[in-house]
Image (cartoon, rainbow, N blue to C red):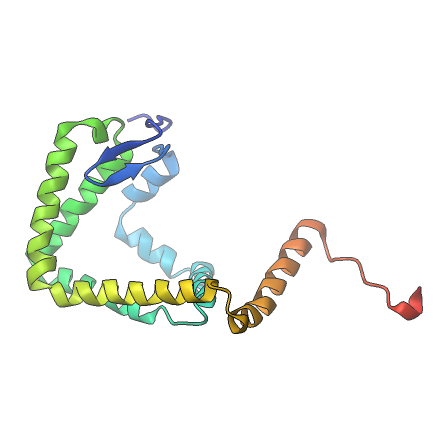
Length: 192
């Protein structure tokens, strides 16, 4: 497979739209390295700090609503997959399908892609509409609650704007310092 091939700018396959995707060597290499390396990366203190800062930033966009319910729901589905061989196989099939959609040039244009995607969706419904319905609903409800909190925060409430202002100013200062060095000292009226 060529690592520099680019797909058409807008192709569809079972509800998945790709937009100017390309199979980059780094992504292919990272996907081939396996779980051991993922765990090694996640245990890196710099990665842990980046995850914490990203989570903090996202929670600030939601007026400090915690993302923990989303993480708990994802973890529960992960535990379900570890304890249910059929569900584990379904997730492996879904992973293989998504990798093929994203990495194999032209696959999204084939009828095989549609057939495989529909079969995957139909098989998944037996898990997520029946057996693990409660866990799926918990995940989607927690995501809905979080996005609703973000939407409320963006609606322009004065309290939200006041709470976001110090964080926005701190980010602005850090960006300015990173790109230009420290900002010039402001003169006081008495110094003029």
